[in-house]
Length: 216
Image (tube, rainbow, N blue to C red; front, side, top):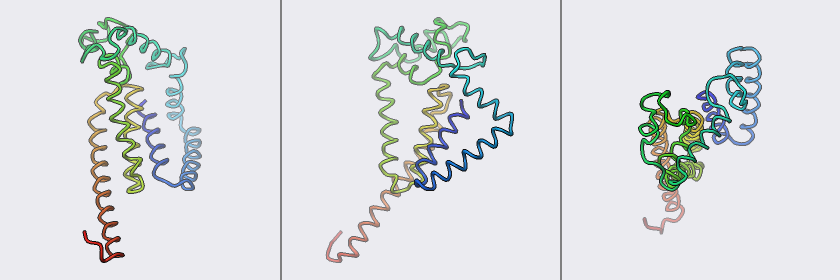
């Protein structure tokens, strides 16, 4: 799932960083290279088959499937049926459900490894926790998108990093990915914010240059 999330991130970056004509060219070239590599490298064929296996409920591949996710979400909904707003509390899955002792000690085996940050937030923090979680990331994504005209590459990188994290976290689980994600995102935000300030200063100077009578 990590490789698949990385591919999603690369696609998003290309989508935001390049104009339509170049984007089409890059997409065509990447698609052609992908087909060539897939047809000539058995390792890539195996990885693609691993990814596609998540859509096959009868797959013998280890890991998550769509059927498993449905079962996990059903189990989560059963646990929060009377605690939908705030959930069951922090570390409910880790402590109360026995995950800290190992998978074999899990109280509700239908939860499996609770592979997905949204189902974890729903279980432990409820609907309100999910709303705060989504609000933060949607707000940052909108900030990058709103100011993409200031620095297209930095905005594209920020969106790509966040989309990669969200895809990975909800397909596999966070697995200590939050810190590096927010670290890189914070750097992108800082660079973008500084560029926004510089742009405002340049625009102000240009206006004053065209209109010498205007005072700062």
